[in-house]
Length: 251
Image (cartoon, rainbow, N blue to C red):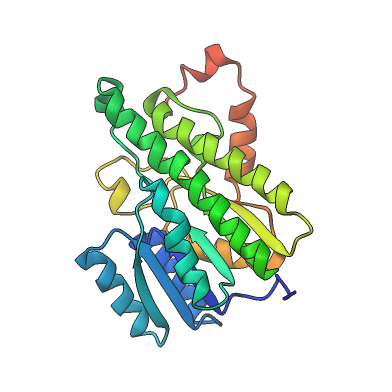
């Protein structure tokens, strides 16, 4: 069993074009990581992301992964683990959706839920079993403060993240004592391509700041990481605000 407080030498990213994931990969490569798998839908962007990490000296490979293709998860992740031990799996896939549009289009609303939650449940159980079999590793899941209490403005996305967050916490409890470390990361508003055009919320952060927090969480063997840390107190207050008050808040 390896020391879980060590930074990973090998990294598997599900959601290989995510700006947060790539910032995390760059940070870990600068410290210890030597092998990176980027999993995502085949695209020029995925290959460009891999090339950018190869330029930093990491042995970087790509693998086709679709969160909505549940039947393929066992095969795809099994192929990666069969190539050698994976020290860390980072779940960084997800979609924001368009709340106003998705409320009028249940099919699209369900796709948001399936991508953010159902796909993560499937891949999460497969990855957890593989990590448990090898007896070590970290499973890091990008959740969101949006999952702490769903807002009128984004309750479809927020509810999917709430489910993801609860699932990951439960998975961490199930794996406690097995040598597998599970960490939930709850960023606030992150300035990325996905949030471009949206007015930034208070305490907005960056992919690089999230990457820094992930590294610190790995070193500390944290179970929950808030980015920025002040959001822990903010969300504690919002979580307990009376509903009549909460729905009137400009958030």
